[in-house]
Image 1 (tube, helix red, strand yellow):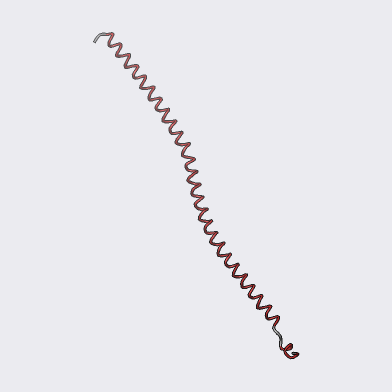
Image 2: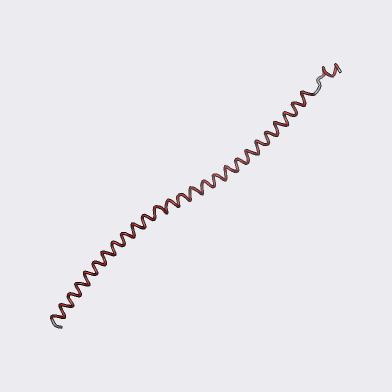
Length: 105
């Protein structure tokens, strides 16, 4: 090989090594950017998952509370009916003639 072709080959090799270093540097930067983007994305995803868990727990609690409210409404209705029937019985007793009243009749 001639000296000129060795020089050209040497320059090409140096250029390729420089280009390889530049590409590796750019690859490192891109990897860093990707990692940063993944980190930024991971936080909202965790927040969403946490929010979903909270919503699910609240839905379960809400369902339990609805059942409790229905039971309490039923008890209230039953107590009101008992109160009304007791009141009716009490009023009936007040209108019943006593022995003294029978004597005067």
